[in-house]
Image (cartoon, rainbow, N blue to C red; front, top):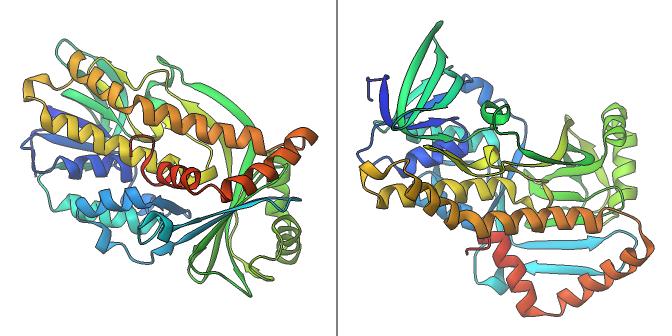
Length: 388
């Protein structure tokens, strides 16, 4: 592990999955890389969420050497898309795409631990409980001021990568925010007739509800207004399960139990640009998406992989230059914009009860189910993004 903390080639702010994936992709580059993570490892591993991972992201994690180290992974071979109060449905099948699975569901802590353990086997410097206070443009790079072990330190980097949250830059470069007026309630449920390799996405007037196969049951993502979501947290288990049955239907039988519930406000937040002088924003720092269709985290993984590809191809002296940043920006523009438009469009078109749209949505799903090329196009974009 490197011991010179005063300067480096690349400083990665955020040691979550996206930042760690970038560091692993660069581990044999010979570059001096420092990862600064504000939280302790046990705090990162306390996240209750399960992640929906695309097949494309699985391939990238396999190339990083961590996929086989992740336990408790559930595969998705079929995605069942429907509209409440409509007979219209679309089924996406892995076999039609000639892949083993369309995606996967796995615990966030398991992914984080696998990536972190792999990172500790490299010569990348990893600083835990290092909170970056300022990120400024310097003459030939970026200057970071961070708090570590009770003292303030400075780190100069030719390239700074903001990989988590992006709050560090929000004051000087405010993101564009679109409020959906929705929150997501996440919990694990069991039922009488689970389909262990099928994921469900059901659109309703109050927002989508997703059932992701996981640990013999399902991880649910149930969206509604902030008031509805808050009420769901207060319901007793019987009331919650009965409400879910009314909302979702009986495609997986009767709902039997529900675990601890968590609520997350939903919004579309995107940085006006993914690059600044000597700085790149990736993952949630670049864009935070609605969870419909499970695109947000997967887009972050693609951000990291593409940035690593460009860094590895560049000369060390080109790190953080305007030309390198422009190359990255161009390489991610199509996938980023298409992913934002796709998820935002799904929410706005399907999360309402306008009569004209209501009848058209069910019809559109039925038509899509009978258009193999169109279904393959949608499935490919969900697995690999717009550049896939």
